[in-house]
Length: 393
Ligand SMILES: Cc1ncc(COP(=O)(O)O)c(C=O)c1O
Image (cartoon, rainbow, N blue to C red; front, side):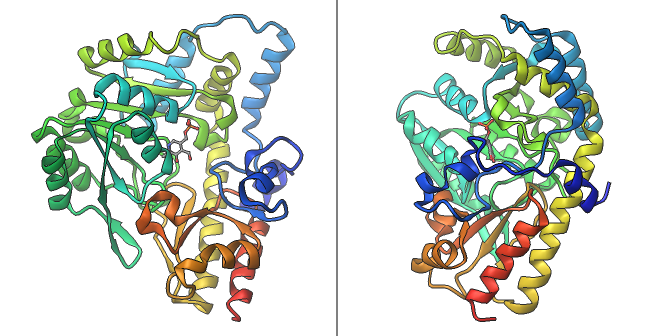
C-alpha cells in the first residue's frame, strides 16, 4: 500500500472526538487552532481486522469480566518471535493498562523510597515523573549529541551508576525523542555495565515495531543469547504500533522467577482488576493481522520524514534533524535559527504548531522540538511551510 492509498483508507478527522492531541489544544497550549503535532498517536484508523474484532465483540453485547486467552498469548508470542527473534514464554507475561503505569509499578516493586533510579536524557518525560512521583532519587545521564546523532557516553553512564548507587535503570529502546535504535554493541555495553553494578534494567520497548530501513530493534532480553535476561524487565504494547493507546493494554515480560514474584507481590497491593476486554481483543487482532497496515504506516512515516529532511535541509540547513532510526517522532534542534528562549513563541504563536517542547524531555532539550510524523502528509507539509516562511525563507 502506498502513502496515498494508506491515507485515503485510514486518515480521519479527529477534532470533536475527545482527542487529547486535538481537542485539548486550548487547555494544554492555550490555543485551540494549532496543527497538532505533539502527543504520540496518529490520525489513522486502526487496521480493519482490529475494527472487525472489536465490532464483533461489541455486537455480542456483554462486557463481563474476562481473562487473557491462549489465543492472545499465541498471537503475541508469534509476533515477538517473527519480528524480533525473541521467544517469549506465556508464564513470563503480565499485563497493565499502560506502559507508564507499569513503570510506576516497577519502581515501587524493585526499589525503596529515595533509592536512585537512572535515565539517559533527553528522554520521554513520564520517565522523569515516574521517578520523582515515587519519591526516588532521579539520576540523569546526558546522551552525547553529535551534530544530531545521539549516543551514550559509557564512562559517564558507569560513573553515574557508581556515584549515585543506582538500583534501577529505565531504558528507552528505541529511544524517544532522539530516534535512536540502539545497536547490539551499545546494548551489550549498557547491559554489561548494569550487570557489573547490580543495576536492574527496565527496558521500555513500546516503539519496537517502528523502525526505519537499515535499523533493527534488538530486544534487550536476547542480547548475548539472553545473558542479561535475569536482571531485566521488558515492557511493550501494541498501542504505538497500531494506534491503540486509548484502549489501555500493554505487556510486561519478566523472565526471572524471583523478579516475577516480587512484581506480583507488589502489584496485588495496587491492582486487582483483570484486563480490559476491548484492549485485549484489539491487541490480539492487531498482532495476528496488522502487518499490512503497519507496512503502510511505516511508508507514511518515512515519506513525512523525507519531506522534512529534504525541505528543511535545502532551505534552512542550520536546523539539525536527528536521524530517524526508530519511533515516529522527529527531534529538531532549532538553536541555530531561533533563540532557545523564544522557541515557544516561534513554533506556537508564529508557526501555529503544537509540539512537544524539547525541555519537557530534560533541560538539555531546550531549543529543540519533537514533531510527530505518523500523520497525514498535509499536516507535515503545512508545518514545514510555516517554519520556513516564519524564518523568512
Ligand atoms: C517510550 C514511551 N513509553 C511509553 C509511552 C506511553 O505508553 P502508555 O500509553 O502505554 O502508558 C510512550 C508514548 O509515547 C513512549 O514514547
